[in-house]
Length: 295
Image 1 (cartoon, rainbow, N blue to C red):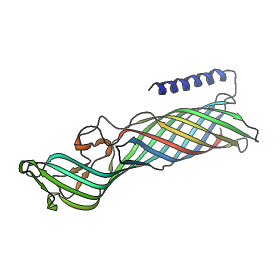
Image 2 (image 1 turned 90 degrees about the horizontal axis):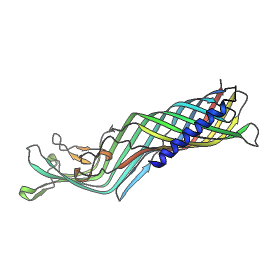
Image 3 (image 1 turned 180 degrees about the vertical axis):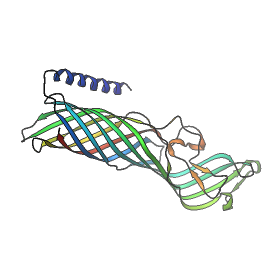
Image 4 (image 1 turned 90 degrees about the vertical axis):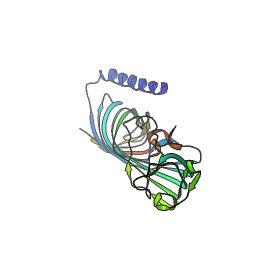
């Protein structure tokens, strides 16, 4: 976390510098703007070998209020709605864990799939606080700007959906040294492609480091257009607590022909140990377009 502490200290120093510089200025311009940004907004995490993470696309809409400290420096606060998307793919999935059947008999539930996929969606309300510096260019009524700041994100919706292709299940009963590959009503057999329902994904608030650079074009005395590139870098892990003891594909004793697909963030091999997906954070990269009016 030392690098993050250094970044926060730099932001605080820049804010202090802007405030001191502004003491000699009597004019305080204000600006209200709306913006949209995207495209690469995703959940980022580590996966085991033979697994692939596909980063998704998401859009963002927000409003921002800025107070100019002087002709170069301004501070701003905003409110935005942002989408994040990701997909994890596990090839050659194979697992087993100990459980009991409807009669209370202990057995090892075994599952395999050619490909196991999990899609994740997270929608968040973000509160960004930024410090921006701008300086005129040789182009008419234009400036280059850069911004740095901090953002607090509150999840309003988070879901996941799993799909297992060529799913096969069986049960190993140690007391009889027997493996059952059927019948289907007991939850054993070949199932083809099985897809679970979209379910709630439990995540927590996120903290971001914000960076932005771009071009500001003055349209007239009151209106401006900003076009730039942004990076929202998640600083904290978004999972709650340690890895759960859930299996990724879980035997449902009450409905053996249907299976529970638990999230990668809270499932582990043999239902114990480190989760399949670790160190999950939220991140965003892309283009930001902002329309602003002086108040």
